[in-house]
Amino acid sequence: MGLSRGRGISVVNDIGSISYSEQVVLQRYLMNPLLLDGYKFDLRIYVLVTSFQPLEAFIYREGFARMSSEKFSTNPEDIKNKTIHLTNSSIQKHVKDKMRADNPAQTSGEKGGNKVTLSYLWGRLREDLGVDTKKLWGEVCDLCLKTLVCVEDSVPNQPNAFEVSGRAVGVRGCG
Image: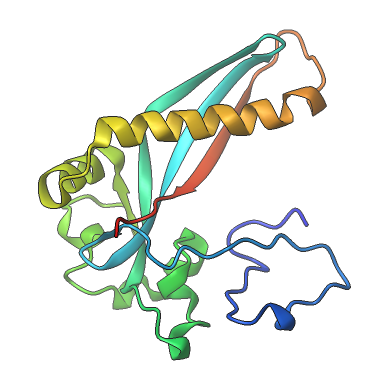
């Protein structure tokens, strides 16, 4: 394990194609993700943990969203196209010159490759899609807290130390 930047991630439509000879993390794919202009995105949220005993954490409000470079598709022929399904910058950087002009990462006016700020994303979700972004932010904070609670017993007490960690969060669509 210990992989990052999209390495080792596969999107499959048949669980029988999974190799059990090595450790894997298997998760159900969101078939109806929340999309922005037809593009999949995830949220990158930063959390500062100053103590695990007692748990004390601070969530930075201005993270960013990573956009896919191609419009979302559930077409079985597109299942292996990582630039549709994964938003990792290390995957998207290989096609950044081919990013469509209607991609939110291009239309936002921000200069961040395949990224947009959370404030830009919140505004678009609120205005264009009617998403209650205050409620969504509360759910993101709850999710971050739950991930910390899951690991707090396994983190050794380290006085005068802190941990900054990033969380990638996918968002499910409605309907």
